[in-house]
Length: 447
Image 1 (cartoon, rainbow, N blue to C red):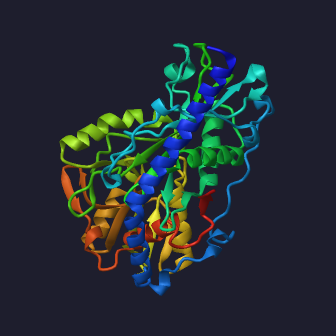
Image 2 (image 1 turned 180 degrees about the vertical axis):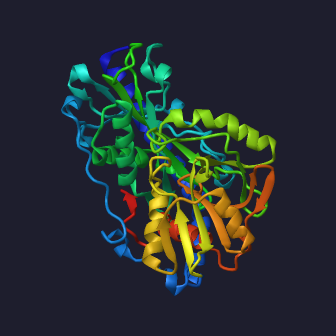
């Protein structure tokens, strides 16, 4: 084959790829035109979605309510940082493109993946972080002695991209995810990075695979940034080589619930998820593997999730992979929304932080971060003062709880019996922000 023929063949494939993209986008737009029109009409016809007491305002980002995370200070030995300006893109060939799901509403969780991924290598011997690149989704190749395979030198984040009612794609508070990811990197002996630059790279990846973002509010595009140690050595030490990568997956509901939409829990004090001085407040894979067998035990008993307890007083910490909130009437007769404090036992959830900020802005009930125990739950139930229990997180947003199996006793929680449940107001408020029904600084639009 001559050089000219090779160049022509390359151009043909490049244009063919673009043509397929245009055709796919046109088909998807046509098939969803009526859906989008119906959504817009519904939005216009809806009565105000929240009572005046629960309005959303842009002042939520004020220092009084919540603050932007502090910048990460990089150790000098990390070396050079990567920049989004040096990002390179290698698009998938036509034969590498994956078929998109036909029905967005019937998606599972994390079983399908988009056509491309983001990869950024780190090598201390080469000066630090290397140039970021977007490539077709492909398997990773690493040495069998890589640290991630032996010592779980690994961490990850969970984010989502939402297609709004206006057709725009948004991500939710990505700066919080980057901050949390860097804190986990420091704890794991992995190199830290500039979160703002990573978000720019991530936005480029999302724009390339934008048609994978579901055209419904019942689904979204899950974003999984991951950082792993890849040194080909068996010594237990900080990583001199690492890989920061991101894959994307269109997802539906994460948790299984009963017909009411609520989940039931196994609370067994013989199991502990985290302890003081540990790493239970960091999003590391090593925190999740030990929970799988306990989750299987809950399933065998007909329960959906595990309620993780800590200490002799059986403190409530997390629900499965979620933070937990309790709404109750306190001793003064006030309604109070309480969640466990950030004392090292729980993950500092972005949804958790957002709910605390919203609730404090509303000012309709007392909001506290404090320990509460299973004896507290039983006492409040006996006195009729426990109103709602619910889990929160990126995967589920808000998940109401209606039953806890605890020390051979079934405790029935009246979460679903409230006339105007707070957990529903919270879910609607957050989803209104995420899907662009209201403008808000927490929702970052992808250009």
